[in-house]
Picture 1 (cartoon, helix red, strand yellow):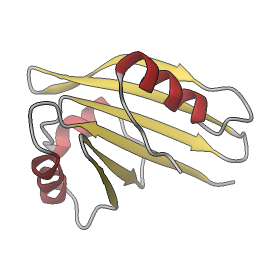
Picture 2 (tube, helix red, strand yellow):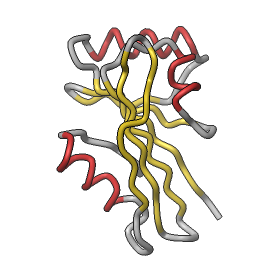
Picture 3 (cartoon, one colour):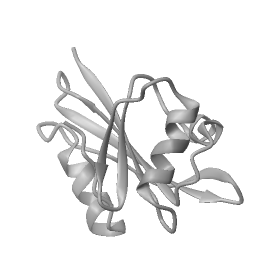
Length: 118
């Protein structure tokens, strides 16, 4: 069984560079991918609102997508930064066979977020 977690930080009014610098201050050599308006972090552990807040990354939103290739499905949770804390605002469980692509598509369609999860 293999699974992976991707966290997409929507930088909002901040630059992607600033968001990446903040993440690098919190973690030693995080595995990241830069998009024009977002930063994707290939997380190695379960991520929740408290963990996101503790990182100190001042992004506007964070999308956490967990995918499992044995179940061939994924789950996603969207967090918004409110008063300095990440708060869950939406969630979706994907169906078998899509390996999280349906979850990513939902959040992209509903919120304009692009999440790299492969």
